[in-house]
Image (cartoon, rainbow over all chains, first blue to last red; front, side, top):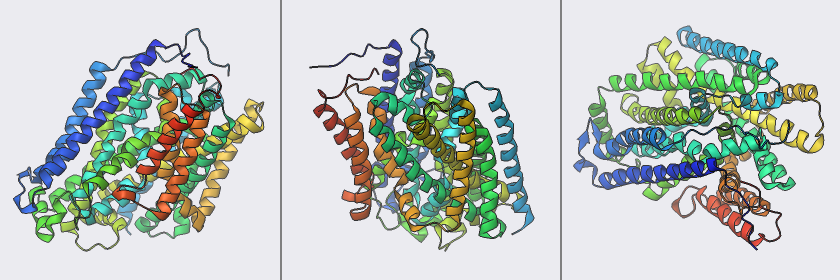
Length: 96
Length: 480
């Protein structure tokens, strides 16, 4: 017997989509961070190249990675996130 | 210690005190005391929300412990610390609007209110109240000790008077001002953390003769310091990556952070907070840990990691500026402690007393009780901090990971998975916390990952398996 009796609030569809965007961003963040750190950082230290004085792996993974995430997060919020009202109209919770 | 350093610190304490007092005056006017005192009336704007989340999360370890380890480990530890950028956007995106709307529907003031309505189970409420009270009380006492030690080392006062100063400056505004005072002072404290990081980072780079110079000094001392693998090559990719669970995505399960995700005014506030939070938390984590690494060529041979940050600040900055920068770790500790104090108090007053002991308590009694319990807890923590009992130190070890393992799935899956039920939630909480304590004791860093990873996986398995297994016996699924 299946009990899927939750009638979907349309706002929850938006909320669920945004939660998935959050998960997507974390996955991207992790791959960028891991890829540059261990992709470029695994060679011997005396063969490192340097960007602005920092080892390239560190620059790309931590510094550029941070900037890229700020840009992506801002873009996701600006273009993909929707404003919804939080207050109930009609269907009230318990009285206080 | 000289007055030029102490003066900015005192100035900082006075500002915090005034902001706390000022924001507490609003409380009297409000109609619903509980909502207001424990949740700021759900009126936080974007900037305050971002700052209070970061300041609550960023504690002594971001400013004192972390840079100390980075000093020893090199750039590999900065890499590890950068997993915390995630906390800036992930918590608010994942709990997000669903949590904010559901919490309003349920009329929830605390995280436990939410769990109570969602699972409709006494056991869930008791277990979660108990774990919040026990674990966060110990965590708070530990931070309290840290705050007093910091004042002690900066001012040369005795531990006892340092503890008293610290306790007095935090308690007054928390007790009378509640959540709004905590959030507003958090915003000031977060600002100080940000500015302090910026000043010190620039000063350290200048003192070291520029980044290229510092990096070549580091690599000539030990090339491992500029690799991602730590000074002795001991930081494996798996181990470092596993911190994404502990200090990255797992933070969703921390009650003191999660409760903030139901305190904001509207969707716009949440959107702004996500952007501001990501920028600020990323900058602080990158900056503070880099400072730890860059301090190494400037001040070689520091034995105690916790001393790196205070010593480098005194070394590279004029005294008055060092005082401002050293207000940052103090701010970090205070802003963590004040939130924990209020959260433990809300668990006792709202979740245990009003829910189960005396539900028909009058508003005026609730008010007096909230003040009294918060104050009493503060005094109790203070007494504990005088000479922390072993049990408390032991419990504090589990407060972070233990709470994550207990709460993450009941909260997240409670929001998004209609089939999750109370049996699953109870099983998940017990499995998570118990296995965390067992792993921590008998098999730390199991399979080369941080201890928290397996308990979180086990508690997920318990939640899903038990929920599905008891699907037919459980009462109708909650409306989510």
